Image (cartoon, rainbow, N blue to C red):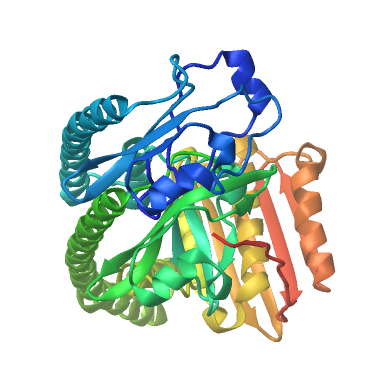
Length: 496
């Protein structure tokens, strides 16, 4: 069978024992006398193969072959392959043999064409059904990992040994393998790929699919890839990623029809992904509008009413002669101030925009509190003071969130507390984080591992960490100067 790019795609043989095949080793690649019939698709009939100058000889262990007859298998002007016969029982092939085999090859060509067309139709139906399935799934109300869904369906349809999706990174000239399935998938997933020296990079830049018969790409584990298809994922005229399909070295080649079906699927999948994102954006916009309305109502009505009540109570306290009653009124006013502070935190959480690329420390702490709230009796009280979003960034923000998570997790596991709080303050050159609870307390030894991590984070930054626990509650106070420690990261790449 002839490959679309020339040479042999498959070599199907009859007449040799398995031991003879193993002895020969590598099957013919369509060179020498076999290649002559590929280059010029006309019948070749020889009395002795070795006497023809086009013959390239036989490998060691190959059985003796004398007479030879080769005819092209074609339908109209397209040649599907060649039919080779050797060692005629009577000694040599005759004109009648050549006519009979030529007629047989013509009939075989029609059968092969029909079989290929039928198989291609079945594959196109399967790709179309998968495309409709992907579109329905991405546009449904359920949450789906669109990239993983696409990779799974392509892996089952294409007959590839490795399927992955590569996406651009924040670093110019680099791609990352977002999802991989198949050969060395655990090693390939997350790998960095340079756009300057890779098949995927050229596809992303040119926005055109590519088909390679032999890529010779090396994977971890001494695995080499052979045939490759790379298809751009294009949305609104922009190439947002690459769908990469590969087979192991020596496997059957991909065809032009395979590339066309994969490209059509990728195009429809890209549109479905874009529509799914647009739908998600509309839902997020509606949610943000509701949250903004609630935040405005809290600010314009609730806080103002509480503030007015506090002013009225302060005025009454100044005219009350009873000192004990005046102190109680003052404490009530302080409680109202605390409530206003808590409501302001809620307003911030409701109204501030959520940005994936720049998440503030306020958002991070609120997210941790909401995540751990089901494990606590009541949701912790959260308060912020000072320009924490400007000062607590980078690695310092990572340390602060780690201390909050560790402390609240300990509260949930050991304290049996009714109430807890998280207070983050930026003032006087220091960041102070205080986590408290009103639980029954716990000796420091029962939390030694977690406390050691908290203390280490403070020590590295030249700060202090305090832990106080009694039968009335626990206080963790973490205080560091606000400076950042730079970090580096080393990345390894492939050339997919």
